[in-house]
Length: 504
Ligand SMILES: *[C@@H]1O[C@H](CO)[C@@H](O)[C@H](O)[C@H]1NC(C)=O
Ligand SMILES: *[C@@H]1O[C@H](CO)[C@@H](O)[C@H](O)[C@H]1NC(C)=O
Ligand SMILES: *[C@@H]1O[C@H](CO)[C@@H](O)[C@H](O)[C@H]1NC(C)=O
Ligand SMILES: *[C@@H]1O[C@H](CO)[C@@H](O)[C@H](O)[C@H]1NC(C)=O
Ligand SMILES: *[C@@H]1O[C@H](CO)[C@@H](O)[C@H](O)[C@H]1NC(C)=O
Image (cartoon, rainbow, N blue to C red; front, side, top):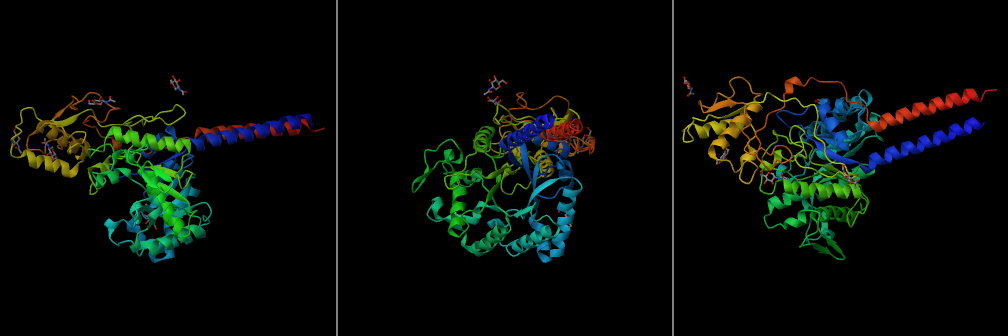
């Protein structure tokens, strides 16, 4: 009997220990968007390690990318899987289509790969004004069908549905959050969606971009975009708003409250700051914004209307050089990390931890394609050559106010030629397309040698060698999980020993 008490106390110690391990990982919890619109995407297993090493325990995918999902299996990371807008029509058409989608893109990854899928995001900002009314008729039926399919698959409790909406679905006529309500043209539809989500335990997901407020309006008070106080706060009754994030979020809370959904859970699905492609898209501002955001997350700060902090998914993890630049050149530079998982700027993650770069990335050879020394900048075929290069490769860093915006004509051409050469995987002949104006060099042509950690300087990249990255096995189990498993084994052993020792 003595022994039994001894081992029971070990059992309680184990429980305590598991709780502590669990708490620590929750306190460090941050979400991030993992977009894959890149010409040379990082291999999924490297991305999953990058997520884990930097304390991201939630990830949002824009589609059910099989490579990403497999790598996320048994990683300890919670997953939100997106459904692109162009699939809404077919999912809205029949429940059968939704069942097939859930079976192939959710159920199988949960059961076969052990992916911890928590949410399915139906559509992505479907009511954005720019889309006109394209997805007005299909979003709700698709949502209903996916929900029915999840229930049929036995996942009704485990996997919740949501719709990520752009902040332009609500507005305030009085200019302060308490005037918040949904846009009149989609008010009824939003109410139906909110009610359906609410009935099924799903949150509303909202994307908030203070950078875009600034981009759209040059008179926007810049300090109101950040989290460190503002000289032009918004006063709403007894509440003073010092940053646009809180004001925007609370405008939604007011809109929900006014329509009878005051306690509707909200997730911030996208929020971040780009580092290039616009004068206000730079390292300094991105660092300032994301650090302010992380501080709020680690200190558990909510908003004046909602003291409970929402789940937040930063946008985004890495730069994506194949994204549409219709919204602006900054669109390809939202990453906290560069395209290759390298740190762009340092962030304090709390608990004295800082960001860590991706490991094990394989690059193409150390060579660049640049304008030949003897080539003439007045050569009539130069503009056409640059245009050609930039129509296939990402030249968004060359724009006015961007990181390579200050180059002379020759370096400017070199940058374009090199981006083309790298994007074409340094293929034979790809540096010879420019009317003999270009040449291959093994000397880094980047104008600043300050290197990584300072991307405010212009860098001539070398691309990831996608071919040399073979698909590898799943990354290891998270250390917290390992410790829990270890202590469980220990407990069972102790119990068995105890049992035999207590036999007469
Ligand atoms: C998901 O499932 C459907 C079947 O309904 C399939 O056509 C589709 O390609 C799958 N993948 C993604 C990323 O949605
Ligand atoms: C953080 O780490 C540095 C060295 O790694 C140490 O000098 C410093 O005291 C630490 N700060 C805290 C608050 O733990
Ligand atoms: C550099 O190239 C870009 C892209 O073609 C072009 O827009 C820009 O005007 C060029 N700048 C200079 C200084 O040549
Ligand atoms: C490039 O130079 C070679 C010889 O140096 C010449 O034969 C060829 O025609 C040139 N190509 C172009 C497109 O100017
Ligand atoms: C980054 O590089 C720029 C230009 O070379 C320089 O002015 C700036 O001080 C550097 N910043 C850091 C943090 O090293």
